Image 1 (cartoon, one colour):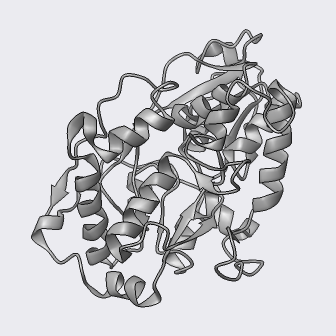
Image 2 (image 1 turned 60 degrees about the horizontal axis):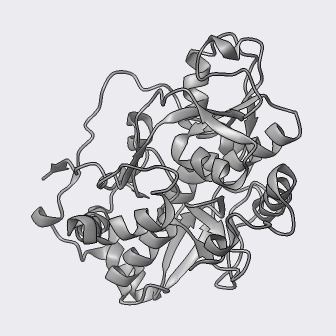
Length: 335
């Protein structure tokens, strides 16, 4: 059982409810501080002014997709999965992955062990095992939401596994794997709030969302009378602002919000999801062998129905908060 599994229903870092989560969030927020930060002692931190800079955040803020795009990914059965990109990783001896350490159930620091844990982290270990033969041959780097694309393009990371939604705008700048999960944007609000969802109950309210997120795009188009959005580098910062009374609601993926609601009994998801958010592993354009390799790992990860590695990870981390799923979306392959 993980440290967080042990602590659920008990005191989180010595506090309950809003105070405990706020304390945890403050520590995690200080750890990332808007920059790429290595986790562990595997290598140097990214230099200041790089992917964490304000300029980078502005440059990679998402744009509304115009029309539709090809949402297919490369079929691992129709091309090489052992080309130069995969060989580069093998020669290095470790996989460098951009992740989150602030999202409970997805990518977070277990306060007992000090290790990263969560649904995304399980997938990273499976990728490392398939590519390098060792699930622990990973160098983790924390990446704020708005900096994910630049971290990939700059070569700071080999890939990002960080609840990253596949959409047309991003697909122009990075290559995506097949989806490994599907979520939806939804409102998180205090239990005592009159807010009922992404609707007119938001009129005059302050809604928080992460810069560079799909929630930011949706709020830019339809605010339902809410005030200009409160924008933060990481979505967990929104929960802190909610707790401090600096925001009235959070708009984020329900998969992430479910983790926050699991930690804090004073908040809850309200209304219905208003978008479809398929999560994919993001990689640099022009590295088809790595994309195919990741897709081959995902094929194996989802295989086996109720006994698959995907279902085991889902049952462990997500089934209680996001029940009823039988697997990830089916892959759509091109040649």
